[in-house]
Image 1 (spheres, one colour):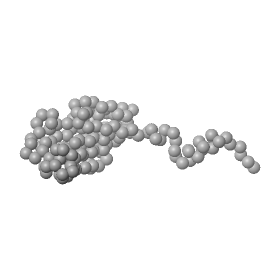
Image 2 (cartoon, helix red, strand yellow):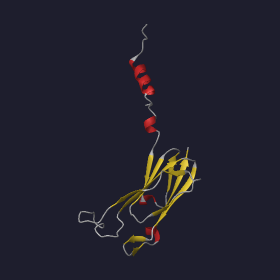
Image 3 (cartoon, helix red, strand yellow):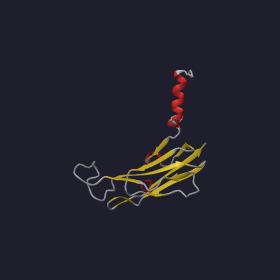
Image 4 (cartoon, helix red, strand yellow):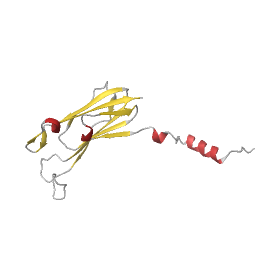
Length: 143
């Protein structure tokens, strides 16, 4: 006995069996935050990924409490730039703190979370003051 099927129905059946529904590629979005977002409010949807990348190895982030709307995905990803003749300008001297730190989060609850980072050093023997030593962004998670 033969079952008649259209090509389109067959392709949809195969995609569904493989778990490749059309919406799965769009389900997770990533919002990347940097120093440019300081003192701003950013809106994300529930389930979205949030990446915070700060451009100095001297930043320290106050990780949100477990009750916040963002859940941390672990330790920050550190990418230091070591002083050398081929390093970018401003990164050729030891102690300059060149590099990036990236913290990853997932928006797990509807609500508002404040990501706050600070640093007291902006380079060897160079103290950070004011906005150079503080980063804060508000993340609002909605459905």
